[in-house]
Each structure stands twice: as structure tokens, then as C-alpha cells.
Amino acid sequence: MARRVWILGSGFSRSLGAPLLSDLLSDGARHAVRDRYPNVAELHTDLAGEIYGVFRQGVREFPAEPEHKVYRHGPRPALWSNAEAYLEFLDETAADDTKRRWLCVELKLLNSLKGNEPRATEYYRAETGEPSGSLEDIKRLPALAWKLVAAHCCAFLEPVTQDEILNLEKWAPYLRWLSRLTPADDTVVTFNYDRVLERLSEAACLDYITGFQIVANEDSEHRADGRRPLVLKLHGSVDWELIDGKQSGEWLFRSTRQADFAIHCPPERLAIAVPGRSKLPRSRSFDVLWRMAETAIQEAEEIYFLGYRFPPSDIEAQKRILGALAKARNVKIRVVLGKSHDDSARLKDLIEIYTDKTPRVFSLTAEEYIQAWSE
Image 1: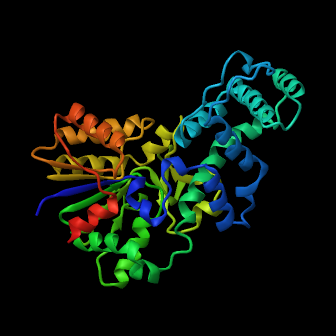
Image 2: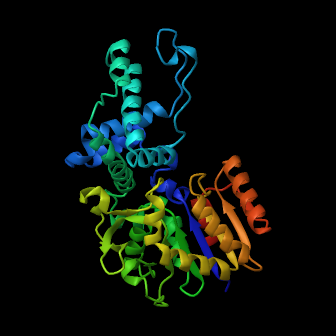
Image 3: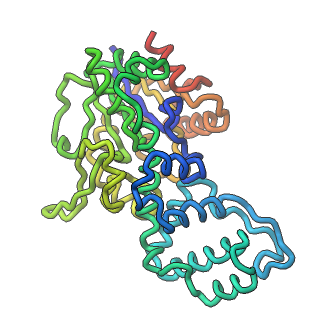
């Protein structure tokens, strides 16, 4: 049997309701979180509303307006293109006093465009640096934004029962795929925060299918038990907690195995790697997982990219995954990104440039591909 590595992104579980990058912090995300967790006050505060509102205003361009003191000379371009860029912006801003005050000003200008106050008065208050909230509130924005993202990644799985996973047609390709994986041959590397693989594994065990071994912190010195395929969650998980490593002086993580951990925990305790200056230190907490992933890729004979495209903001992942792939010998590479020609072409180019290897590209969705592969 060939050694295989499956590299999963958000497109892998899209058909199950998992959010894509374009869905995060959108109006749809806000409604999903509100509908699923109406009694979790922290998710519905004014500050949470500001996070959604500023993202929505900044993701689009504003036309030039002759009467506006700032935008009368030309349009204001979009400030960010997606949620990852916005989270990075919030994280950078919260760490710098000057940038925090600038964000207060930007909040004022965005609010003025929504017509909340007369524009002249609104701009004057912004120009004087009077914030709509305190600068301390601005410091809290990144961690709360992470929690809102985590809540969205939990919401679509919350109502799903084990019986539905075993019997609903949309889960069938995933169960068949899992049933074909073997501990000696398969390693799953995922960048998703959600618990799709955990839920899949739990349900599979009820149907006498061997589940996954999710490698978490308590397993960091652990060797594969040889009975289950390994899962390496390189960006953390919504049910993992950051803990203070008092002896090492570094942050560590552990699996809580609580499906709703992200909903009720302090935002700062979420063990997920999000864009921004906080990402690299948090990613170092997962370095043992990265080393295991790099080894698996280097030794692989087949690599499958399912719904993962190397987001432009994730240069570290691009460097490490493609660096390991360049060292693999006689490896077959499959790229499965659906009908997105641009994403497929970009990933194909990256692989060829970094590794001098040519992948085969499929226009199927992830579930279509694993369905066909499992037959």
C-alpha cells in the first residue's frame, strides 16, 4: 500500500455546512451564531456588533462623495478583502497605541457613512481622536473576533446527531472514505478549526469503523498507537485550550474534548492560530504537530490537497508544507478544489515552482472526489 497524506482545508467539509473563508464574519455568520447561541451574551455585545459592522463596511469600496470632507477627492478602496486580512488588521492594530487611535478614527468615518450622525459632526469628533469606545476596548477586539470565528465553526455541527451522521446521505462519502483509511498508510493534515473529523470518528466507531487518532498536546511525545490513522490539526481546534507552560515558559495546548469549549471559554484561551502577529507564537505551540506533518509529507507516495489552497496570508504554511513536499520522492500529487479554476491554477503553480513536481488537478468537489476514491 502507498503512504498517503491528506491535506484538508475548509472546502473539505463545505457540503456539511462548514464555513469557507468568504463566510467568516459575514452577516450570515452573525445570524448563524445568534440563532445557535442566543443566550451566550459575550457573542452579542456591542463590541461584537462593532467587529461584524466594521468588517462589513471595510470589505467594500465607497464611491467618492463631493460633500464628504475625506472622500470628496476620490473613492475609498476596500480596507480588506476577506476575514483573514481583517483579523490580521485587528491584531496589528490592538498591539500599537497609534494604530488603536487610528482605528477609533476609522470607526467614526465608517459610522458617518452609515448616516448614524451628521457627517460634519461625526468627522470632527473623529478628527479630534475622541473614540467611540475606549482604547482598552480596541485591545479586546482581536480575541473576541477569534471567538466569533470559532463560534461560527461550531454552530453548523451543534445540532447534528450521531444518528444523522450515520444515516444522512451527505455524510456517507466521508464515512466511506474513513473506512478505507489505514493506520499504516494514511495521515490527515488539516487546517480547519472545526470538529468534523472528531464527530465523524465518534460516529464511525458506533458502526464498527476504526476512527481517527487526533493528536493533541497530551500526545506530543506520543507515538502513533498503530490502530488508527493520525489527524494533525496544524491550526488548532475549537475544543483545544491554551495553557501556560510554567516550566518551559511557553504556551502549550491541550484537548478539552468539549464540543462547546469555544463558546464558553475566555477568548484568550482558544488554541487556534488566527491571522496576525499572534499567529506565529500560537503556531509554535503546535510545532510538534508541524514536525510530524512534515515527516509524513516527506515520506509520502501520494499527497491529496482537498479544499485547501494556501491562503495568501498563510506564508508560513506555504513555506513548510511545500518545503516538505519538495523533499518527497516519487510522489503523486492530487489537487481537488472544485470548479474554482483560479484557485486550482494558483495551487498548481505554487507546487510546481517550489517542488518541481506537477500535480494532477481535478474539478470535483472534495466529497465527490473522496466518494469516487472510496469506491
